[in-house]
Image (cartoon, rainbow, N blue to C red; front, side, top):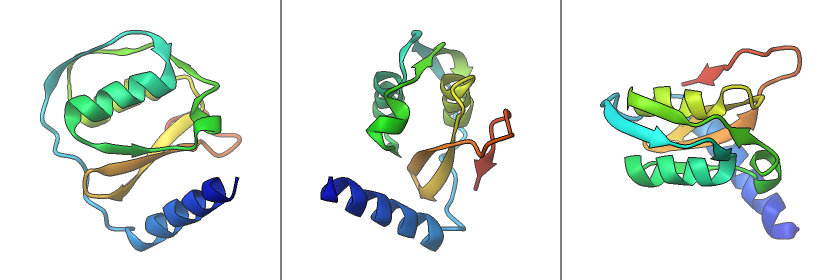
Length: 113
């Protein structure tokens, strides 16, 4: 439990420090991630694109994704994976993002750069 609290605090402090974090390069790549639980889908995308994806397992673990397919940039693929989950992402640093809940009352995906 304490490790989770420390990890969350570290993530939140990184978010505050890296307000100007750079996006992942917008290179298009063939993407084919099947509909499945969200956590393994995010892990697949992170591995394929060499990007760090940080999330709380209790936040992501309850969601499924419809998948992502096509010749997509990282952001397009991630947006497809998160579509309909009530989650979005924010950049922590170059090549690193975190998955967060969309604020209540907003059903659209919000991206902070």
